[in-house]
Image 1 (cartoon, rainbow, N blue to C red):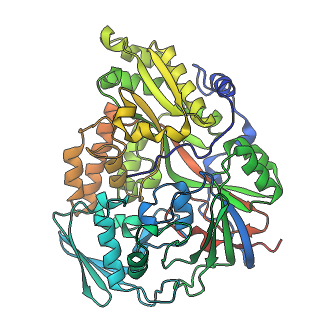
Image 2: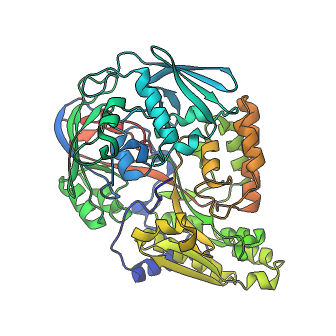
Image 3: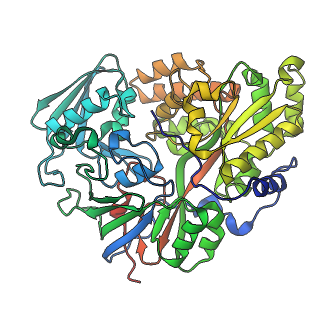
Amino acid sequence: MYAPRLSRRASALAVVAATGLVLAGCSGSGGGTSDTSASKSSDALTTFTPAGKGSIDKITWNVFQGEPQTVDPFQSADYTPNMINSNMCETLFAQTPDFKIKPNLATSYTNPDPKTWTYKLRSGVTFWDGSPMTADDVVWSMRHNMTDKSSFYGYLYANVASIAKTGTAEVTVKLKKPDYLFNDELASYAGVVVQKNFYEQHGKKVGTPGVGVMCTGPYRFAKWTRGQSISASRYDGYWNKSLPRKVKNIDFTFLTDDSAITSGLLSGQIDGTYGPPVAGLSQLRASSAGKLYSGPAPLAVTLVVANHKGAMGNADVRKALQMAIDWKGIGKQVYAGEGTPASLQTVPAVYGFAKDDLTSYAGSVKTDGSAKTDEAKKLLAGVPADVKSKEISLVVPQQAETQQLGVGIKDAADRIGLKFKLNVVPATGYSNYLYDPATRGSTDLLYTQFWPNIPNPLDWLGLTAVTGGTFNQSGYKGIDGLYAKAIGTKDESARSKLVVQMEQKLHDEMDPMFSGIQLTNDVWLGSKITGAPAAFSYVYYPWAAHLSGTGK
């Protein structure tokens, strides 16, 4: 259903180099030393970069994860395709860079009874060929999401009974049972709107280089040169005139090598990118060729408990290992100061409607993330010897950051007397461990860099901790009842209290994810452009429409 959230960049660094760095920076004493030029305080975070005024004919923007397989938004659920598609294909609601959900192609909605949602559609919206967006297009798009097996978002329609056009500019969704998460999910590609006729005409060829897509966004699909770039051009008939849209053409390139990306940014061959290489952050911060900005993000580097049959089936072993890991040092050394210890499994950018209650609870369990070796050993003292003697295995992809992370975790396990094995596998095959039980086998822990569909804690919990969730590989069932109750609860205050109960249970059990590292979002803008959101919004929000020139 989801493409894997792997490390933000591939890297050519050797395992030996990674090992040396982690053991130096993540010792048993805590945070270790750090490169102060690569660290920063949270008060440096910003939501938007400075606005500009000038127009630019063309820029080059790199997508760090490489070339996508398709630009069909129904099959788009990872960094690269979403970074491109978010500027082309729009959703019924929009996720803003400050992690709010607001009207977009739907101007309003009503919830006349617990099992009915009715949407009023925006007038004056056209597809790139000039034809108007209609209720028929919206109904077709939603039904396609619900029924097409290739869609990544069909599971979000599990409670939907019917979707119908109920007026010239009105669509009504009937549910099988109350679902107060469904409406917000329409701010992800669960609510994407495409042109019905285009999809019916091109079928499975939609999203391929020769066909592209037909949507309503500020940039239109122009050209896809395999192995080189995807080009998008400004759609001058776009309905939202409040967005600057000062860049006329964008070439999205696919470099994945850290050194090549950094060199391209410093030389000006690449005008901008999200997620610049960690290895190049110090150079970028010191350069006058552009500027590096950081913003808040719903991103977490975490460990997924994949197997309850081994030592990880014991709550005290899980809590002891999490406690012994030097998350603070990992954030400083492995992620160059871009990561800070997370209090909960869900990170603050996703707190949404439960922000006040979750902030309060997170504060009550907050730690600085330093390794607590002695406390962990005391906790393990009460664990039966036959449980402690079982080997714990962790699989990570063969990339610099993930290998460094893995070595840091193994170091923590060794220090408290756990038997631990770190397995490094090719990055290209790592997703098999996440999604294929046969490949995963009896693996105990898996790495992931996770982000949810929307800024709503129920979405995060549904993906990670509820039966059937994509990142609930161990089949954890501890919050299923509370989750079902929360989904069906209309009152936000009561729903918020249920979310806190779930987070408390997950924290107390340290299952099925560890509370790991919450990341910031970086964006590099070359000297001639500015305006892009610094916050992590590029996976569903038309970030490029904010770009403009600096006059340089």
